Image 1: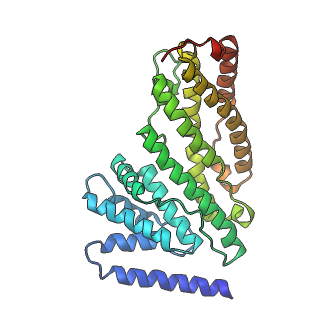
Image 2 (image 1 turned 180 degrees about the vertical axis):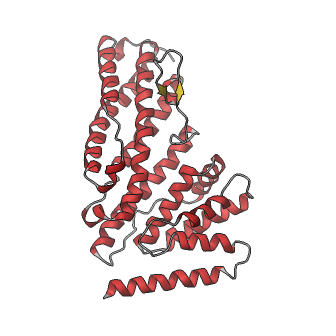
Image 3 (image 1 turned 60 degrees about the vertical axis):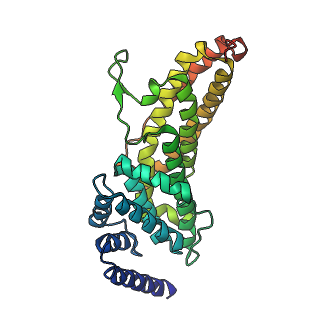
Length: 316
């Protein structure tokens, strides 16, 4: 049938690309690793190929190697019409952002200034019902990764890689950086984190894509990141409550907007977790409880009622 023909054609394209890579001597190994990690085979990128790409993007490599990798992955993503190739390329980029060092993130950020690699609003593979459903997931996943890079641009650090710290006054519990940020930084960073969480919650596969193992693999990466993002927002809100009495009026208004959004997002995140708990991948997952966030929202509610914005000090 047409599915078998497409698989054969995909395999032929992969082997042709590997053959061509052999002529490009300088980046031959890297080219082959990228083609093999993002080939037409419906399974996650093989670890050895990903490790080769990761090595080419490490801090001690020439920046030209990193630029070459990013350009090659971007080209692979923009040219393919196949959902498997597109998804595997996104997985490689996601893992490099997650596991790579800071210099890769900086280079990726400066490259994405020039062209929006991760925006695929028109991506469509209509070769089968699975391909069609999976295309929708590819677009959502790409959008989430784009927002992840944007969030890094605002925060200047990666939430996922950020280490939790123990505060002297806290009872042995580790906290995110947002717990101790000054007001101005917090009012910049929390909206960026909330925007990222909104994109994350929209990453829901539908139809035949729900049970696909390759999509479940990518969804697991996304789901893992929700925990740290959630903690950062939660700790930031507790910090906002502490500062609320001393805020200038304009800041207090911004803080209220953040708080309202957090309440809506707590409900959406809870529904998202319920949805994901029914999927195969959830069997190995420890989902966080949302009671902490709801507690900090309750704390906020009682604080803001006692101290309405109009009573906030008029400060410039």
